[in-house]
Amino acid sequence: MIADLHSAAPLPDGGAAKIFQAPPAPAAIAQRKPGEFMLSGNWTALGINTLDQQLDALPVANLKEAAVDGAAVEALDTVGVWLLQRLLQRLRDAGAAPELRGWRPEFSKLIDLIAQNPHAPPVAAVRAPLLERIGRTTVAWLEEIYALMSFIGENALAAAAIVTQPKRIRWRTILHNIQSDGFNALPIVGLLSFLLGVVVAYQGADQLQRYGANIFVTDLVGVSMLREFAPLLTAIIVAGRSGSAYAAQIGTMAVTEEIDAMRTLGIAPLEVLVLPKILALVFALPLLTVYADVCGVFGGMLMAQTKLNVTYSEFLDRLPNAIEMSTFLIGIGKAPVFAAIIAMTGCFQGFRTHGGADSVGRQTTRAVVHATFLVIVADSLFSIVFSILDL
Image 1 (tube, rainbow, N blue to C red):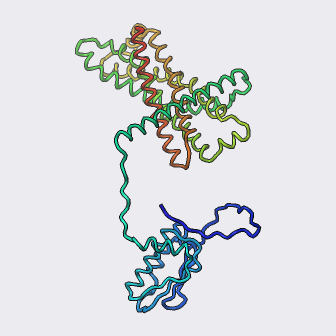
Image 2 (tube, rainbow, N blue to C red):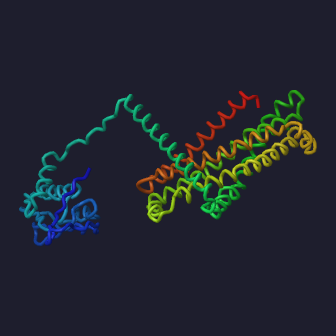
Image 3 (cartoon, rainbow, N blue to C red):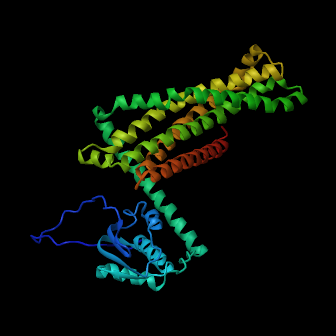
């Protein structure tokens, strides 16, 4: 911690001073005559600039006496004292006995305090006990879960208010989010789904060839892609792409106080920033999942033709028999839930941003990690429920 001492002049009228941040006057050092050094300006971390280089260039050789006048110093902190100690040490090394003149009492106290123990070792950081760290981490997680539940409740109330007043729905914002989060994601979703279909068919080809069951590659690709891989892969891609964008956008607005300005103007931030994103993603993610289904099956069909000699017509003839309608609906039914998780998590982490730009990056990372984790947890819960229901 840097100690900082500033001088303050009382107001002539005895009133309260207006607080403002003026740029500090830079620290300076001048030599009026040999052995007499005049210090001025702000000898602080903000005012020293390149003063350390000037100190090294000062002529101090062949001096018998030296005086360091600090009457014109406006502010002093521990960084400035450190530079002052360097100057005094150079004078002592040159054979002169430096004398301090004109320093204010509060500055002299700080100089004397540091001079008493100039080589004090740094204070070692005290590591909290393991049980305390576990407790603090648990409390932090519980507080975040409580905040997330409160955020979900606030959005539910905002959505109910919009339902009663449909004119408040911001269709233009919703359509913009559908384009940015849905249509613009088609290339990356299609490419990765196609490659995943190729991988699934390739990995199953060796096992199927051993038993002469080449045609069952259709069952393998179709069921795995439509039921599990396509909705899960699409959700993870959207979590990394759109969830991070939500957190970064809202976090930047929180840092720049735009959200506070919206509240001041009577604009509800949830209706403008959160609900349009949730509605757009709930609409777009199922469509992206269908697109991923098609691309993944096409990739598997291409690999089946290449690796297993299963023609396109044989693959397509087998596909309706291999896939039931429930398999397709299960995969599509997961998508809206994944969309709500991704949008809610990204917006929640954005609203929790505070401080500066580093907080925006931190919350963006947390949004992607938490959204991906929750999507996988939700998919696992779906699998358990479907297994119990025998679906």
